[in-house]
Image (cartoon, rainbow, N blue to C red; front, side, top):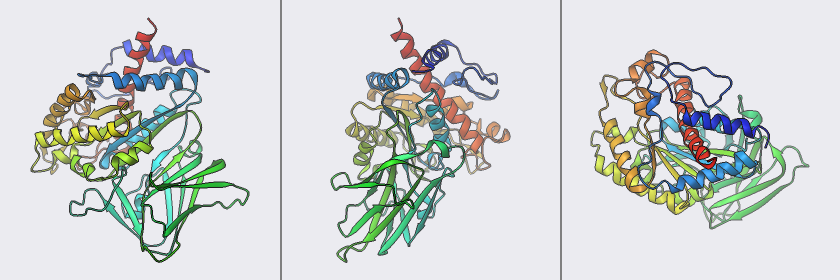
Length: 419
């Protein structure tokens, strides 16, 4: 594969070079990350206390992709508002998809959050007709079925339409030639795909067991157009659980699954989480769930750890070979005034899970600079005034640091393989 030697050299160099706290701006090594003096990138190495065999499976798939130019690697990022906005995830997606020539792949999972009257990632623009109501996994009193998106939208209209297009720097790379529409299977509604170009051929397949309708195009597309139509009066609603835009090209997919306010308990309410996750064929699942647990006045470290143990079990039901990475909470404040001390308890719980469940841990709290570091991030324009969320620039830094940590571990794998 073109450029392979450069990639291998860069990754091995990254694996053996100690990170520094000084700002780094490098054009010859895309895996080096710009940092600030108040950060602690030395805390950013992946911690694997227990069985790490699942990571070997991930690295084998990365070898096939990066060294041979074949196959696809699916990364799934699960979280709350840090993930829903798709700034942290988008930076990692961009980094993975530009780490080597010819490994772009596609966009993967998306959800039209604006249809649920919530903030939609800027990178794609859903337009729709009809009246839709949303449901999120943070609603404790609702037992409606939810999938891996953690959110759904429902319409009772006889005819509705959805159009999804891309914008910004991401636009040229997100052509797709397949689309899976995840929905509650209902013979009284039909989902069809169409295009303004009448020469485009689109094959349609309904998978009742999998809970989706799949469309395959005879060419690559840059815009998705769907029609949802009631075919008889037996049922009176249609529920959309997300859309997966696929590609036959080799490369990385990073599927972002985020819901504002979601905690570990929220994700456990998603009855079809495992089934939907299996459709994404995850090689690596990154959980960034804990900031909302830690802000709960009734936070319990034991309950939090038990919830995560169950989430890990559900991931392994979806794919027993998937590597799992837990990111500790970013630093945060309670009511902008008091450092949230539960962040340390969250980190401790994750380290215990690393030992007993064989998952990896990335210390976002430590990398940021520890408790109270959010003030410095805010002052530097990397965090918002609520001292919980980051700015776009802050999420970009976080994405770069997490990407570098994963690739550092992969570099160590390459170094051992070269012996």
